[in-house]
Amino acid sequence: MCKAYPTEIRELVIAVCENVAELDERAEDPDFEQRLLDVPDIDSGEAELYALLAERPHYYLVSNDKRAMRALARTDEVSDIRNMIAGRVVCLQAALRMLIENDDFGTIATAFTPLRECETTIRVIFSRGEETDREQCVETVNSYFDELDGQVGIGFLYSP
Image (cartoon, rainbow, N blue to C red; front, side, top):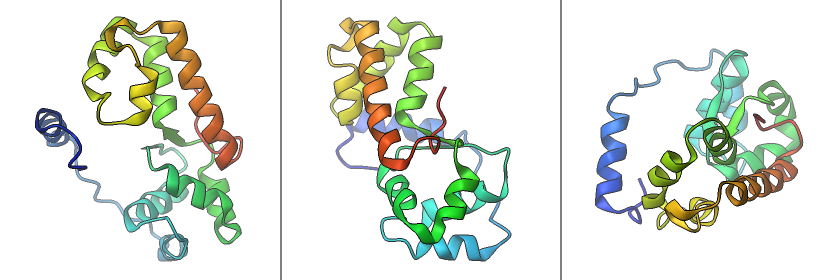
């Protein structure tokens, strides 16, 4: 975890992660993972997850690794893998959009306010902390989503 996050945030995330089961599945075809590892800006963790996602059509991946998403989108040698996982990669902006549109906005704004100092996207989206206007928040999330969607290719990201 990034050292820029305050201790209390790191401890909270660690506590939540302790309740998440470790991924014990691997892609059956090692070629998928190897081909992804050959792409600059896709690290071993993302390669493993993308390869597994390619083989499991009912899986979705929640990721904020925009660098890896862009690399996958611009590399012709893995376009088949990109097409296999298209529509099943949930970026931070899509997850935030779902929360903002479907849950109590005040609760969401309160929950994300402490993270503003740690994550630029969250800082901009919840710029006024708990005072953030819902409509402005939705507009900002949509703007960020549309920008990333344009960079990775329409249809790659899950769009709620």
